[in-house]
Each structure stands twice: as C-alpha cells, then as structure tokens.
Image (cartoon, rainbow, N blue to C red; front, side, top):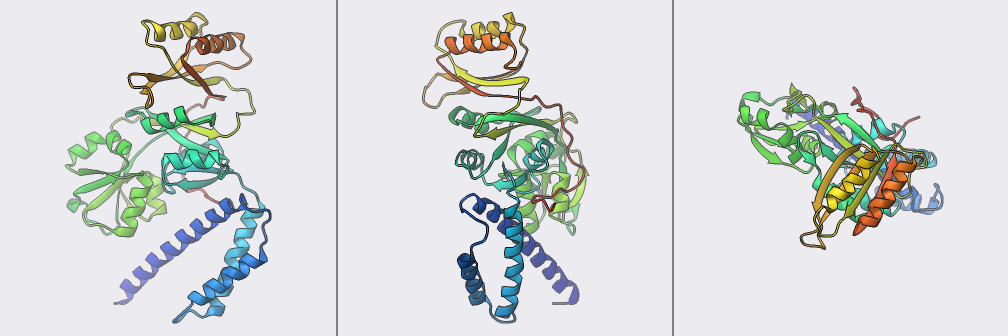
Length: 366
C-alpha cells in the first residue's frame, strides 16, 4: 500500500470509530433509564477488565484503559444531564431526525430500526417521545404508521411539517457516467420517479434514505448512488451530484410526535380514529357533525381493519381546541355514532417548518 491508500484506510477507520462512539453514547443515554444512579464502580471495573483483555498486538492494555476512562467520563456527563430522548426511524441524517430537530432542538435524537420500534420504545419508557411521518404531499399516507396509530395507546402531542428536498449522492471518486442503480426509501424513490426514469437509473428500495447513504459510504458498491438529504452528504462524506431532484418543489412531509402522556398545553388541532357500522350514510353523518358546527377538516384517511375484514378505520384531523364547546359537542357526537373511537390527541398545529441548513448535534454538548 502506498501513502495515499494507507491514509484512505485510516480515514475509513476513523469514520467507523466515531460512528461507534456515538452509538455507545446513545446506549448510555438509554441505560440511564434502567439504573438508579450514574456512577457504578463495579460495572466500570468490569468494562476496564474486558477492554484490557481485548488489547493485543500494538495496543497496550494501559492505553486502552486510559481511552475508556475518557469514554466513561463522557458517558457520565451526558447521563447526568438527564436529556429527554426522541426516537426516529432510520439512521442519523434521516428526514425524521430533521423534523425532530425543528420540533424541539434540545431533545437528543435516537435512531430506531423500524416504526414499530419507535412506538414500542416510547410505550415502555425507553424514549420520552417518538416522531413518525404520517403523510407526504406527493406519495400520500404512510400506511404502516397509520396501522400502528390504530393499535397504540400513545398520544399525539405535536406535529412538524418540513419541506423535503432530495439530492442525488455518490462516492467522491465515482464517475457519474457509470451510474446504474439508485438506492433510497420507497417513498423517496416515488417522490423522484420522473428524475429516475429520465436518467435511466434502476430504483432499488432501501429501509431508509439516510441508511442508504450510510450503506454507500461503508460498502462502496460500484456504479451506485443514493437519494437522500443534503445533510447526509455531510454526515457520510458523499458528493452531491444533483440537488432538488424531487418531482415537485412543493414536496413536504408531515410528522407526528408521540408520547405516553397527553400534551400539557392547550391545542388547536385534533386527531381521532374511529370505525363505523356497515350502514348507508354513516361516514356522511360523521362529516356532517363537523360541518354543522363549522369545524374545518384538515385530513381524512381510511385503512382496512386487520381484525375486521371489510371494516375500515377512519382518521380525521380537524381544527379546534378543548376550550371550544362546538368541538366538545362534535367529539361526543362522533363517539356516540362510532363502532370504535379513539382520541389520538389535541396539540398545537405546526406551520410548515424549515429544514436546518447545517448539521446539528445528536447529543448536546451544552
């Protein structure tokens, strides 16, 4: 190996080290929920013994122990801050993480593998909040999230709507003329359908936009690019070949924030989900309840019920607060008319947010 190749290998190793350090600190934040105090001398001795036993070749045990003393000190520091955690699906740099930052920048964002993991970890108290996308202006509803909302006992305590501007990203050394395949989340691929077709790229679904960027950075497949955010180019050291490749510049995604407890503040927007009996005019009657009280509906969706073949759950979002008697009357009337009814939340409606222009801290250093 020549000098350039060795330095390139060192850069790749440093990337992995920093990524794993960040993951370890995220585990430390989660662990704080499960233990009574921050300092645990017995556990720390156990860690030191373990890393000393793993030292070999050029790594001296004393060096490894000094290094881990610093890591444990940092773990203690962030645990003592008792940061509130918000979970999102995907890897760092995902649009969900950006939306979480616009909702509450002080929260520490924690990646989760799936939407189900986000819901479950909020339910069991591992996370204070979860953030999930519910609808996109181009591709419509996120059906998996809607199904989980039907099943969960969590409350919606807020929302964040952000513009979604996709970039075509590639490895810095990649010749764009050789590109053949593009990886991204199915929603992102759908939002960029015209661009993909026009450039004759093979669309390959991936579980997350940021996850696709991380995969490209780590596995370095040939003739491959990804569709992800501009932030992902910075986080994963990728080159931006083309910005704003979504089919329409108005592309936005709406996210909902989940909590075990109902929101403490008075809201101006309601979300409910209900099912109806199989009789003519039932849905019309529910919509008329709102219309007669001059209540504005902002969203209506339907999903088939898994435990009731032929039955549907209906999602309604509408304007109004719990201080408005018309809204309270409407909720009672809908509840009485429904076969099943669940109030998902009353929360503050969000004007369209803006994506942060630069990288933000996932674990605060304040």
